[in-house]
Image (cartoon, rainbow, N blue to C red):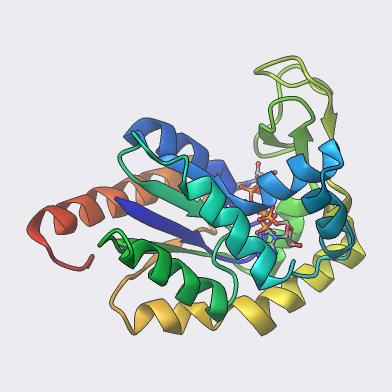
Length: 226
Ligand code: AP5
């Protein structure tokens, strides 16, 4: 199964994606996480990506597509892939289709996390991330019991630089200008499944699980998700 989690920044894609990938034995490909790791490690990729991510602009397509190809090469043994935060432009979506078609594969469903700008601004302003394991929390909706340390590993929690108000505004504008058109791209291919992401984390989880079960059923029958 190959799934895309698509939606505005802060809609809750990452919160759901990692758990679903683990539950279904899928490779988890989150381009934002990979870029942050590369920036922290000071690799050439990180040095190139830093100025873009800090200001909420998209990293150039060529860089991202090369990164995803590298990550997919590690997919051996996985039962599929969850893409989180990729693709974000039409050239990225086309490149993904081409890469998958080389192994006679395709995207099975695109889960669209539909959340209002008010909800995402509130979520991003309260998000805290673990420096060690990358786990995500929210000061009100999903607090770490050991705040300001991570529940899972005891690592230090921090606020992402691009979650500050000015950069959030820019990320939302970039999403509207460069990513939102992918909704039509996947809708026209019969792959888009809307998830109402303006609900609690557990309600969204239930909706995501239902959408994945439905997609799995459709894959089994060789159909598109309904
Ligand atoms: P990336 O890391 O992908 O950021 P994003 O898409 O903006 O997504 P977020 O991680 O901000 O949000 P999310 O939807 O995963 O929300 P989360 O689950 O954390 O990208 C960062 C940057 O990297 C980009 O700006 C760009 O520069 C670059 N980049 C990455 N990919 C790229 C690509 N393909 N092409 C070009 N450039 C790329 O939840 C948010 C908060 O809300 C958390 O605190 C969480 O606890 C809370 N929360 C989650 N769900 C709920 C809920 N249902 N109710 C209440 N609170 C909730």
